[in-house]
Length: 144
View: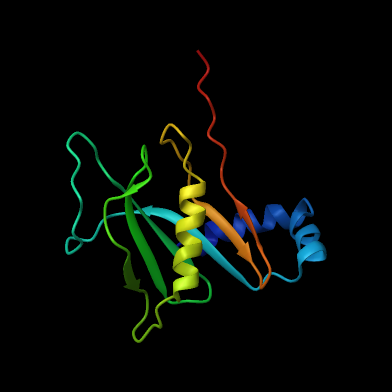
């Protein structure tokens, strides 16, 4: 389940209103699933690779077609993993995501981190059998 379905629904509604969902589906086929990447807290039982002077950032992907979230801690400035992947069930007996979806999460996460280590979130992905439409908020520069 999506970690914040209401927030995802707001974004999806805007994309429907401006015609982006219809355009995507016309070109690529019907959307079959959704994934959302958000920040999270690293669970206590997860081993972290410590790098002096740096703090890892934890992200998790949630899906509307799995009842588990997938987490990863990384150092955003180098895109280096600070942990292994962890799976957090969101419902009893939940089936964990397949490796294809874990790799998709990592690909979208790493692709959203800028060269300077900055990033924005949440990340919203609409997927079907052929491709995806991923929405990443734009960081606004501060006025001086």
